[in-house]
Every structure is written in structure tokens, then in C-alpha cells.
Image (cartoon, rainbow, N blue to C red; front, side, top):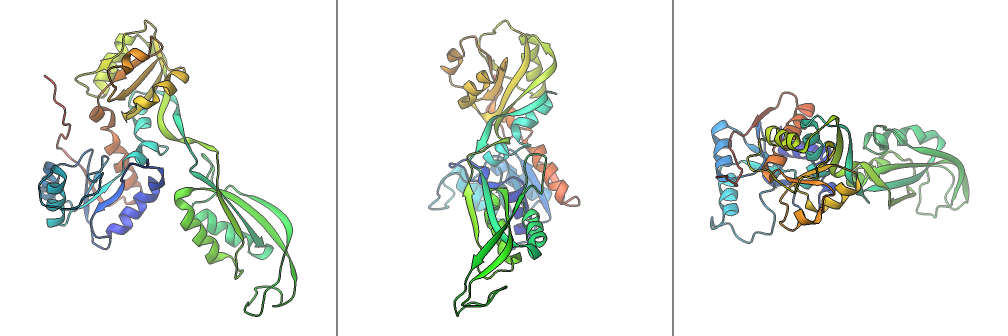
Length: 364
């Protein structure tokens, strides 16, 4: 399989447009036209991970955390990152990362955490904003079905659990072509009126180019009239963090022990217990301290995340049980998400989990 076919699928399945502005998800190392035969999935990329890929015959490494975050001016082996880049290129190993886009998309890292805790009624904690677009175009009646189908096949018209969503209105379009035109209907130089359908649908911003290409390829007019603009709508199916509920509440002490067991967390840090039972839980994989207020506002009894600063534990003021389960521990299940996505599309492709522990934090 070509690397570009594989990476193009992941770019779409876990939309690159979902990533935060500081991030660097996507294909980082590798020639798009190169052939790949097997993939090694890991949370982080280290030199040991590259060695493991070599030993297992994997020519692609997929990680959650990107190897390359900032600009690199030289590759001399001076830094940790440079040595990995050099070794990967030398041995023709491609590297792909899905980071904050994997956090944000609808079945992302936080939802996987919630599923591991057997939470129910799972919803997004901080929904995605300004990533939806509206497309409006005008189609002659004879070509409505062809154009509409092409737009849906390109990914437009998805709203939550529904697809092929659109709205049509009948109207009369008018136009006059000059002598350089070759109109689909009417005559050049003469005003023409045509029965048309105003068709509108929504799409995610990362699909813009693909959807517009489908429109232009299937619309019969020489000059296709269309409007495309960003919506203010909140996408409740994607975003950072999530919140869910236990079927039966548990004590805070039992809850903390449960977290330690499920996430194999050896050093759980937490705020002063509130004395309340835990039923509703907010979660955010990785560094999610910026969502503490969202968690409180959601009515959650506890909030699980990582990398919480010292003073943040004061700020909860008995409003919520704040828990730092560890960065590695909270995101370790991201590998399962990536594997499921790959197997769904390429069921016969060789996919392996790394057996190397990349957690840089050790506990006494």
C-alpha cells in the first residue's frame, strides 16, 4: 500500500483541521509514494521505538504525541529529536502522528477513558466551535440528484448520527453569457431564465476542498455559483474532554482506587475529598487543566486529567474532586483508537502495538 493512501485516510478519519493551532499532527517523516506493509502504534516516539519497529519489520510508526513540534534547522544528532529523525530516515521508516485532532474528534481519547470506566450518557465537555461550514449552490432541476449525491459522497451533509442532510428550495435563476461563453442552457448574449434548485448543506472545514471539487466536477454550468462560509454553530459531537455517569455512585475513596486500577496509575494526585459520592465524572486525556471550570459547570463530582499545577488544587474549593492520573496513563488507550480506525478501513493490514514503555516518569 502507498503511504499517501494510508495517511490520506487517517487525515480524513481523524480530521487534521481539528488539531489545535500549536500542534503538528499528520505525516511527519516519509515519502508519500513509498510502499508500507506494517505499522507499529505507540503513544510516544523514542529511539527505542524506532529500534522496535526495525526489529519487527514495521515501516510505519503511528504515535499520539508528535515527534516534531517545532521547526528544525539541522539534523546532526545533537538532540533527542534529531537522532530519531536521522535513524528513521536512514532505515526508511515513516512516522505519522495524531495528537490534538485525536483528542477532539468524536470517538477520541477522553471518550475512550470514559468507556474504560464504564460511564454512561457520555457527552463532550467542551464542544468544538467554528469548524462547520455551510455550502449553498444553485442547480438546474435535471442535475439536482447527481450534484447532491456527489456532495454527500465527498462528506458533506453529516449532522451528528445523520448523513445526507440537505435542504432544497425551488426558484428561478437568471444569467446572460457573453460571446466567450458556451452556456449549458440558453444562448450567448441573451438573458436566460432557468428553473433551479437552491441546495444547501453543511460540512466540516477540513472537507472544504474535497466538497468544492465534487461540486465543480458534477455541476453542468460553466460558471458554478456557490456560497461557502463558516458557521458559529457548536458541534456537540466533537471537542475536548467528555462527561459521563456511573450507573451506581461510589465513594471518593473507592473511586480513586478504581482509577488507579483502570489506568494503572502508580501516583494518583488529587485535591481534598469533598465528602460527596461520585456519580458524574468529567475527563480529559493529557493536559486538561484548562477545562477545570468546564468540569465544575457540567455538575461533575470529579474531574480526571493530568499535568495539574499546584495552585489549581486550591482553586476547586471543595466544588469538585480534582484528580491528576498522569499524562501517559490518561492517554495510553489512544493506541486502541488508532488500531480500530486502521482495521476498519484496512482489515488485512498488519498492525502491532509497541511493547516498549515510553512513559518518561518513574515513581519511587
